Length: 274
Image (cartoon, rainbow, N blue to C red; front, side, top):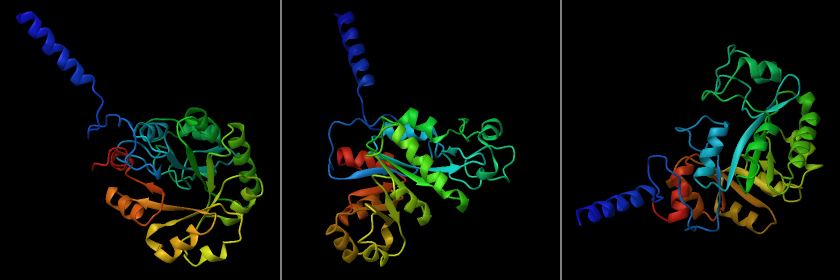
């Protein structure tokens, strides 16, 4: 009898240990259905206290927390290779031996030899990163960093070619603060967005080819949101720093939201609890 009780207790303990749950210890968030099923959540920084920005480890965390999409940066090296790196400074999240140099002053070979991300990962090219994460998310928001105006056409062509290589045209949204670069992308791209801080600019862009409008949620008001709702454009709002701001943006009837707090946000989106 005692042996049977002991075995039963051990079984219960084993089941409790194996049971998936949402916790604050970094365990997987289990997706058993969504409390909010009408929103696309974009991991902007993902889990900034748990992983290095623009690293494979960061994307893995965003995937683990069930992000719908990720946003990341690509910069061009001296020898015209796109790397997943914010730039121009290498000080943000790398351990380069020459931190005073910027990303455009390195060749890819030099970056691989001289630099690593803060978590020890190598700096990856866009192609290398997409090879790892191409099946992880519903959407990929790629910000094109331009540090040499003479290379805009080259950058646009290279990004388009790489995305098409992975058949991700319909899942990738390209953005840039450099509007000349975006115009080059628009000529050959299926999905793109326009980043703007100026609310009045939305009305001027109504007849443009841009499919997405991206802006800081703090500049939006009901008239702008209503205006865009009556067009065929999609509005992307950034960046919720925490769950409270995510709820604030959601209450504004915006349904594509970037957040720096993917863990707590997806906990709420999936379960409805804070």
